[in-house]
Image 1 (cartoon, rainbow, N blue to C red):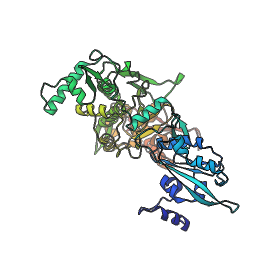
Image 2: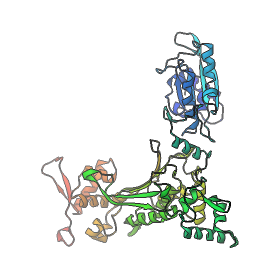
Image 3: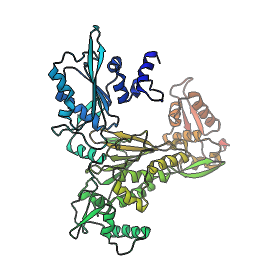
Image 4: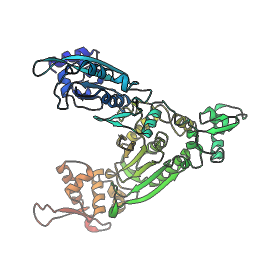
Length: 527
């Protein structure tokens, strides 16, 4: 780091080591730097935007709203006086009226935004002294920030995207400005509700809390914010409907899980359509969780693995991990996206959970294990009483812990902020390195005793050769997920020497050479 950089970061204060690259600078650091070269070279993104001195005051409203709303919780900086080719224009050419209009833009066009602003001195290429206007926009944790005309925006990469009424409501719910769960639902009580489930829930609350039997079901539901009593009538809310309605789809058409089991590792279509099982699971949240768990468990394979000199059976994925993700997908999804279902997709190498709605504000894949910000706290609280969910981010930690114990890759979480926002969680298996399903190809073909003489990589290669009919070095490298050609070739040569494979080639250095599984049980030539 050169002296100029050290001087700049010295102004920023703090005892922590400063970022060494521009993308790590926070909006506050950018704002305080007062560095014209920095403002010209920074890439525009969700925390930084340049505007020409020709901009009209009303056109600043969208970026102020967008940086206030996120989804990034960092806020952002707007610099006025640099054109779209990153050339310093300065703002001295503006009339006094335009300057006042620009600096009053937040108050006039986006009055709820919290904006700090200042002018800083610059020197242009021609040597003339000028100034830029800097605006530091604070992220709003409490509310949606709209323009004076009612429009609202969010910051997606380097663009300020206008949002529709549905997305506005979702942001209000995510920020706690509005409680979607507590809105009265348009269902008849008790006719449209599963009274047996309500009775079971309330009896459990009475038992665990030591309450008297004088408490009615409705009073207990009300104490859990699942409805309210008015003039002798109980009015259930959205949370109550999702938990206890006979069929919540009358109000939330997408309140179901769509389960898909694929053959292979990709989603095929048309002539290559490869769905083996296609099931839709509906009902209230509790019944959907149980039905999905039973379906996933029925499709989980068991493998034999070599542990301390003997074979042991092992599930494809640890149950606590995938069960927790089913619960999370049902409990933490956005039910404002009423028509969008939750998906569970099983492939040969992974299981994918996709739930409607993006991450909550402040939550991202990097901090998901440590940040607690539930979207549906009243649903979560009720299910917590039944033992279905864990609070204070214990659920995601448990998923990671169980995958580590099973010596499987850590779960992957991602967010898609497209037209239909969703969160995806992926569990990956290591099937290619296991000894195949119990009673599967390798163990069944050569017997458990001979299989113990092979390491996991050799079994994976044999399994592939038996499935596809042949294997070459490139295929084997893909199976083992390695780029080591010589390592893979040695594994193949050992299998040839053991007479499990036969090398097939028509000429020296044959690019079409391959290995074929030719071992047969009881054949004396294999002894």
